[in-house]
Amino acid sequence: MKIAHFSDLHYSPERLDEADRCFGFAIHDAIMRGARVAVVSGDSTDHRLDAHSPALVTLARRIHRLAASMPVIMLQGTFSHEPPGTLDIFALIGSTSEVFIASRIQQVAFANGRFLASAGPVFTGGELAQVLAMNPEAVFTCLPTVNKGQFAVSVGALAAATDLGDVLAMYLAASGQVNARLREAGIATVGISHGTVVGCETEHGVTMAGLDHEFSLSALFDAQCSAFMLGHVHKHQMWERGGRRVAYAGSIGRFHFGEQGEKGYLLWEVDTYAAWAELVPTPTRRMVCIDFDGPPDMERLAQFAGEAGDAFVRVRWQVDEEHRQSVDRAAIEAMFANARGVKIEPRILPVVRSRAQGISLETSVDAKLSRWCEVANVNAASVLARLQLLETGDANAIADAVLVQLDQAPAVMLSTLVVDASATEAIPPDDFPVVASPAPSANGATGKALDWLEGDLFAA
Ligand SMILES: [Mn+2]
Image (cartoon, rainbow, N blue to C red; front, side, top):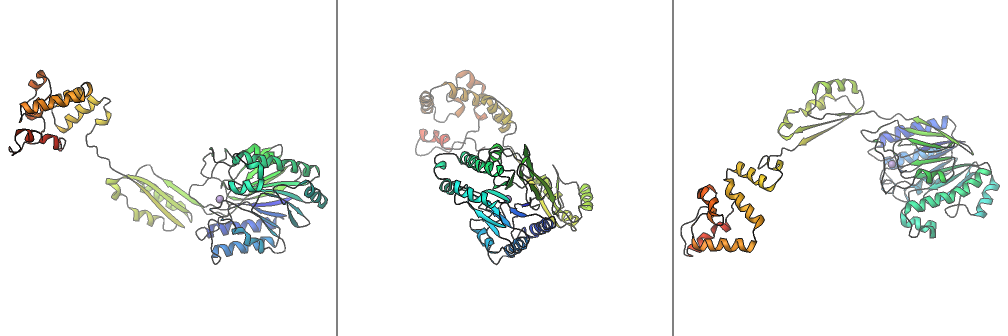
C-alpha cells in the first residue's frame, strides 16, 4: 500500500510562497504515483490563522484537491503552530474522499474507503473483532501532540503519577498488542505521531538529547507498526529494525537559513511485515549562508554574489565597534541585488576598556593591589601594609588604634595612622592621595581629621 507522508507544512503569510510551492508539487507527485492514502503528520499551519487569511484558504484548497484523489489523515501538531481546533475545519472540506482529523489518541481502521476510529486509545476486543471482519487495508495508530492533562484523561489510570514519556511508552506497547493481532490477520499497520525521538538530529545538525523528549526509538518500535510516520523535527531521517521503519518526513520546504539535508515528502510502501520509504525532494528555495569570522572579504563576497543566482542569501560578519564604519553595508546589499532575498547580520563586538590593565592577570590580592598602585600611581608599600593589617588584625583593634591616633595627631596624614614605625619612616606622607584637609572648622581638630573617612579615597 502506497502512502504519501507530508509533514510540517507551516502555512502562514510569511512562509506561504515556500510552503505552497513545495506542498503543491508534493501533492501532484503523490497523485501521479498512485498513493492510496495521504498523511499529514502535524504543523500544517505555522501559527494561528484567521479565516480570511490567504494562507489558510490556500492550504484548504490543497487539502481539498488532495481529498479529491485519496483519503487524508491530518494529525494535530505542536499547539503553538496549530492551536487545538485548527484542524477541525478541514474535516469539512473532504471531497471524493474523507479528511480524517486525528486530534486525540486513537486507532483508526481504513476499510472500504472509510475511516473507523476506536472510541478509546486502542481498539477494544469487541471493536477489534468488528475491524477484523471489515478486512481493512490498513490500521493507523495516532499519537498526536499531547498535553499531560489531556493525555491523563484519555488513557485514564495509566497516566496517574507517571512520567509522560513512560506513559507514552506504555500506550505504544499497548497498541503494539493490537497491532500484532492485526498483522497476524495480514493487515498493514501504521503509526503516526508528532514529537521528538531521543537522539534524533535537528535540521541544523544538532543531536537532540534531554529530558523533554517525547519518545525513545525502542518505544516507537514497540508499537509494532510496519511504518511509523513522524512529524515535528524538520530534518528527514529514518530508522529500521527488522524491515519495520520509523521516519521523519522532515519539513515540506526550507524555512530557515542553515537547514541541512534535502526537503521533500515520503512516499511509503507499507505491507504487513515491513515498510520502505523514499524521500521525494520538493522544489525548495536555495538558501546560502556566508559567514566571516572577522570583517567581510569584499572580493570573496563579490564571487559569492556572482554565483548566488536566485538564492536567499544571509551574510554574517563580526567587527570591532571601532571599525564598524569600515564595512560598506550598502555595497554588500547592492552586490546581492539580484538574489531573491538578502539578510545582513553584522555582529558588532563592543570595545572593552579595562580600568586597571593587567589586574585580572594577577592571582593574589596582594599582587592585584600592587598592580593597581602601579597603574594609579600610588605608593604601594603603605597600602599593602594596610591590606596586611586587614587580613591579620582584629577589626575593633584596628578601629581603636585609628581613633587613638586621630586624637593624638589630629591633622596627621593617613599613612602614619596604624602602620608600624619602620614602615612609616619609609613613606613620605604625601605619597598617599588623601583628600586635602580643609581649613580648621568650628568642630575642632577631631571633626576635621575625620574628613578622610567621608571622602572618596579612590576618587583620584
Ligand atoms: Mn514543525
